[in-house]
Length: 85
Length: 85
Length: 148
Length: 148
Image 1 (cartoon, rainbow over the protein chains, first blue to last red):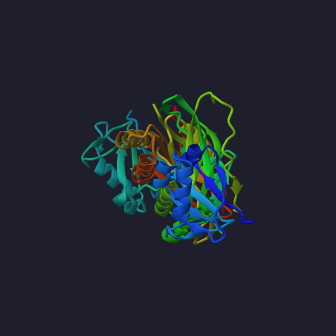
Image 2: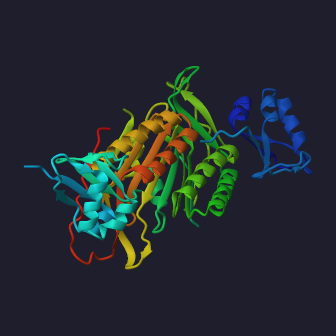
């Protein structure tokens, strides 16, 4: 049985979804990061505007290529523009 | 009876003279600041090199014109280059 | 290791940062602190900011910034501390500091650290206006303190 | 009056300077501190510096610098504190700080204050090597604390 992707949601992404974390099922071979983002935007339409300005992060590393595959058990984070300080 | 000028000596000027303050007699009409500095350099030869790089200050104000008169009762300070911080 | 990195729920203080920057040859110390401002916002005065952080990536970027600041500016000690969770108005949310033999590199490194922290470290803030209208749980920012 | 000026024999601290720079809209605070370095000198390690000051002119210049920093950079609060007399190695001899809504003016004002203090304020230092060889009286720098 496939493990889900752990999706972490921060700031406006968290507000749009209404929670800070989701478990998201993906095929055993994984799916491209851009496809996962599209699935999330369809499931949570309010997330779409935030996704357009966010960085995507897999297992702690920023995703540079949109076709990078996200696999079961990965951590997938949505980083809206940073606001520390 | 004329009051002396109070001469304040700091840092290398203090070391050259061996004390931090002098009472120096001047005529009742005062003398130019440059002349007072020369008198002090004659009396304390070790003071001469410091005087060449120092600012002269009368009653708390930097002396801009060397012929400014220093009068009995004035405070006359020798300010070697500053070294705060 | 001469860089002190912290992501913590506890209050930050100038004096602790000053102590972290002590060293026999370190004559110049610069500390920048960001404090939560009691600004006017839609719903009244801001009474607090709530900071979230993505802990692992945040510490990784902070480590990189720290190494870069020391390599670029030749500063010997640095601090880069950020508070997470709720920070009341008037309290310190971030401290970036550096110590060197002289002041120029300390100023440059502290400025670099705070500018780059704001730009590249995954931390976010949300305004909290005065009385919290509903008693909501804070968004569980993972907090940690790295080894100094 | 939002500038705090001090010439004092008492120890200086980051935390006191931080408190002097508090204000509801002051989100950016920069503190520069100069610490006495335990440098190698002719007669061994420096164990202390002895600071002399010409009190009246020093306070007058510090007041001018403070006004100028606030006018130039728009900072709301400043501190300019210098210790006088003997300051042991490792302790703070000077603090220059500024607070503003944002960080850029606070950095600029703190840098201006320390640069100009070193250049224009009548304060001098003398090195004291480890054991004072003869028990000499310090040169009586008049010390004062201006009204904050």
